[in-house]
Length: 293
Image (cartoon, rainbow, N blue to C red; front, side, top):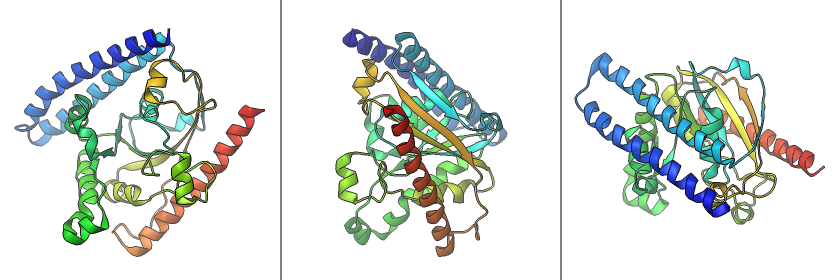
């Protein structure tokens, strides 16, 4: 049964993804000559492709009964698809992305997220995300920066360029603040001060705030807990992720002391993110405690 579910789920996702890529290929070509207000409207219409893509995947997940989500959403009525949001979430598995897209779809604008540069080579998916303007980020070593100092700001420039496009119409920008998926090994290597999380990195948040300072309405904070075990992508397709707990809440974005990139502003953002992460860590502990009881 698990094998059959995985096969059907994979076929469903593949059909939807290939269909999206075919449509996007034409739209991306059209973007090369569209200018002015027509280009702005064109970008808005491209988001409908993401919505269709996500709804197709959601239909597949629901029909196959792949997951049962328990969602706690505080002040849900104050959220609207007509506003811009910065979304932050803890990160444990690739499945996180599919679940976030699925369960936030009706309440927020379509999610755009930071993508590792290597993912552009994934057949169909990489091309689709590139055409839709997802910002690609690349890990750069100190040695590479020393050899080519311009690389120091490569990720910032990519994000700011993407933000120009995101400002066109309501968008949700997803950032996995830890910068990588949580594992016990990484947690131990970091000697993280959090029980359930890796240390947050505020750089991505700072870039988005810098690029979308006037557009962003609020920060939406999502906490994901897998009560049984963190599923791999294949576990999810096989229906082995039968429960996932979501805690979703939103926060006002503070008025920083400066809209520009300054040391004082960076410090304020870092302290704000650390406070959010401490509260998230305590929340995860409480959720796990409730489940075990």
